[in-house]
Structure formats: structure tokens, C-alpha cells
Image (tube, rainbow, N blue to C red; front, side):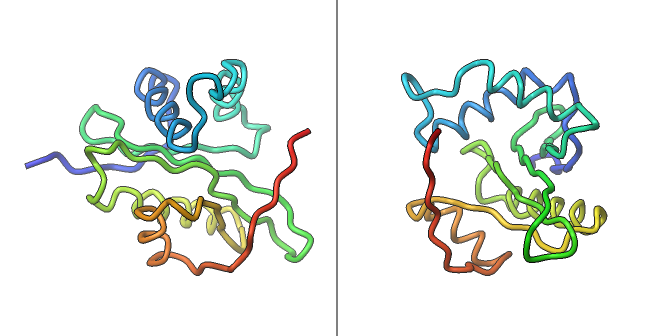
Amino acid sequence: MMPAVSIRPLQRDDYAQWRPLWDGYNAFYGRVGETALAEDITRTTWERFFDPAEPVHAMVAAQGAAVVALVHYLFHRSTTRLHDVCYLQDLFTTPAQRGRRIGRQLIEAVYAEARGAGSSRVYWLTQDANVAGRALYDKVARHAGFIVYAHEL
């Protein structure tokens, strides 16, 4: 029987276990090899999690001493709401741990954090082809029907 999974804030000494999850998340979205994120982006992202002036936050799922999943989220203003909203930006579970409701637990933990911060909504994006992720997302949120456009500067 596997140890229970606990959700907790990311800690500085999690880096060695967080980094492969971060790299796996980025690889899933095609950011690997020549298209990988620059190392300074990863380094800056990591530091932002521990800067109280930053709106960026992170939690992990731990199974015993092993970190098996991550979630990153941030708070920001919205022109259509009086209270901040929460953007769940990154969610990744090791392939060996998928199907154990860990992603759901992380999403629900973000919901709780957002509620506690006074946010009025949590939202996120994913690719159409993320079939497994979308199967979960359809159970815990409503697809709003938006199509995302992006232009790199």
C-alpha cells in the first residue's frame, strides 16, 4: 500500500525534486531540447515562489518524503471583477502517480487558497489535446469556451 499523499507549500529544500517535475511539465508542452525554457526563467520562477512581494505561489503533493506533483498559481486583478482572480498556471503529476486523484487534490488546494485570499474565481488553460487533463478539469470546473491567442514579443 502506498503512503498517503499530502498537499503542502513548496519549500526551499524541495528544489531537487521540484526540478524534474518542472522539466516534465515543460516537456509535456513542447518546451524541451532546443525549445526548452532558458535557465534564467527557471531560476527566476523558483525565486519568485519565495518572495513575499510576488503574487506567484506553489504547492506540491508529497508521498512520504517524495514530491510527486506540483501546482503553481498566481493572483491578479481583473477588469470584470471587484476582487482578484487566481490563475492556476502549472499543474503536473509524475506519470507513475496519475489516476490517484492527486491533480484533483492540488486543484482543490488552490481553490482553498484562492478562497482564503478573497479571490472570486480560479481559472486555467490547457491544450485541446490534453485529453487526460481535460477529463479531470471537466469534473472540477466549467469550460468557458474561450480560445486563447498569443503573440510573442
